[in-house]
Image 1 (cartoon, helix red, strand yellow):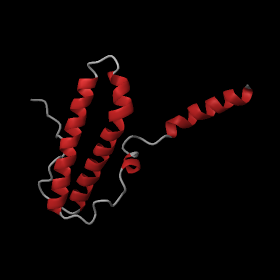
Image 2 (image 1 turned 180 degrees about the vertical axis):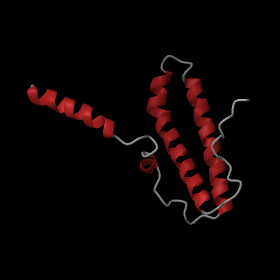
Image 3 (image 1 turned 30 degrees about the vertical axis):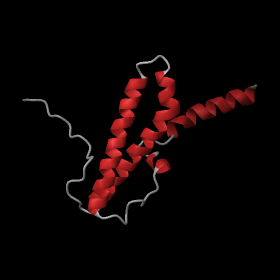
Image 4 (image 1 turned 60 degrees about the horizontal axis):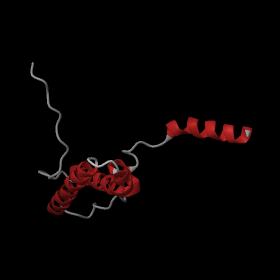
Length: 115
């Protein structure tokens, strides 16, 4: 019994050391996956990934209207969405390293409040 309680507290304490979602992107996408692509190819892949992201978020929004929606989202859509977002992040990073202009799918810029 004491060993189980100790194991629980050890897991709870080390839970704070878990990687963030941003760090987990490498789980979904291999680093360097897009290194050999040229800027037009990066843009094309970014457009496809951005369209897939929009499709998945739409499906998740529609599923949330049902009582079982959160379960469906967790079981079906969340891993796909994480993969697509990791791909988009890697595409943006690769495009920035290659100094590509006009990569579709750039993250939205924050809106500045009026002064």
